[in-house]
Length: 323
Image 1 (cartoon, rainbow, N blue to C red):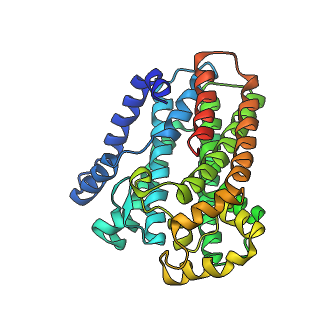
Image 2 (cartoon, rainbow, N blue to C red; image 1 turned 60 degrees about the vertical axis):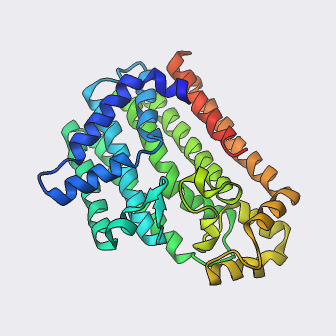
Image 3 (spheres, one colour; image 1 turned 180 degrees about the vertical axis):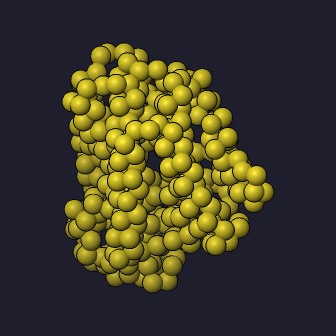
């Protein structure tokens, strides 16, 4: 990944500069909060995907449109994180206090709204109804995903199909939009745009599944947030869905964690061990890798450049980060 980001280092710095400019305001509190969010860092994977797709399709990653829209994607992502942390009552994000924990829910809600509106204001500069349509549809789907998930908090009857529906809306469609817009900026024909949209969709699914595996196998220091938080928040992810299929007797333990908001009768180490012993982690990784392979197949429409190779490397990174 260092090599991937090194290849587009100049373009990513332009995105960082643009993000700083967009997050600045003559209103002191917004200026301060914008700086706090930017300083929180993050992988910046979504803007990187937009830039790499633009360049893999023959476009210029340093083009002002590419830089602006890559920044828009990071702003939209940041806004969703701010709102998600409020809903989840999360205390940490990226190894530091979340905006809601540091400044309160009211401030966090308004800052998330401000980021959304600023992102759309920036996107309007492109004067592209096609791109605006993608972004408005994306934002609607992300909001729907959050609302659907809220209706299923604490439920143990979530199916794999329902889980994937939420995942698509909350995560995968944003990846898909990054790659599709990158192809549009490069002036690619419709078939290439569709292939890049599909690449991003499959990649986004794999990315979230990998995150869900890390939630049950990783630690808080590595994750930058509370480990094991999905079950604590009443969310059933793919590893937990697979475990209940294999070991239905764990319903009581899951209910206990959700009800008490802590790992007590069932410890995180016990859960990790059971997931491993029951073959659940292997099964989830097999599912994850199937999405990774499908995403890479979508890249076949592109010429064999170093930028296409970087897109393949990102897919490989997502596959490997859950091991």
